[in-house]
Amino acid sequence: MLPLFIKMLPLFIKVLPLFIKMLPLFIKVLPLFIKMLPLFFKVLPLLIKVLPLFIKMLPLFIKVLPLFIKMLPLFNKVLPLFIKVLPLLIKVLPLFIKMLPLFIKVLPLFIKMLPLFIKVLPLFIMQLPLFNKVLPLFIMQLPHYIMQLPLFNKVLPLFIMQLPL
Image (tube, rainbow, N blue to C red; front, top):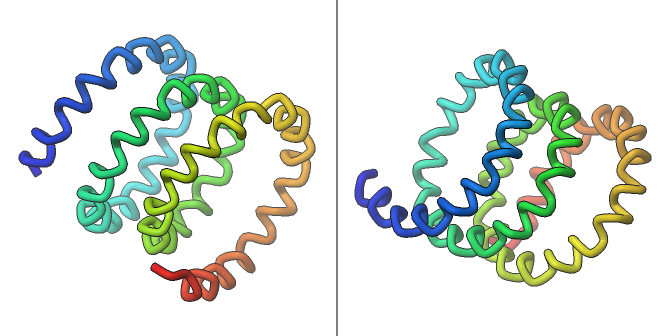
């Protein structure tokens, strides 16, 4: 684990100024994270089960990290929107955690697609004003989507089996 940390240190040093710029936003979000702590402790046993998978994925993460660093300025633009949606995400988190093992199966494919995602992201950000108009409608429909998640969880493994990993 220490050699991986040493490899990541130069990247960390590059990201540090951006992190410092984001600190005021982080301070705004901190009360929400504190509210999430009880949920985090409920989820902790599952996270401990998934930890070995994350450790296996660490080399992939290191490959992708430079791409994420390139995306950080864009992330800073999107972060205020994320903060608005965070309370809703907290409600959906337990369902997401149930889906985590499937997500881990799909992650290698996602990593292959990441360069394409980075090319498309500026276009997505240009569409954010429209997204802000549509988001309230989506939020109104969210209970319906959440009710459909058990069905989605049944269908997702079939979909994943069809993916060329």
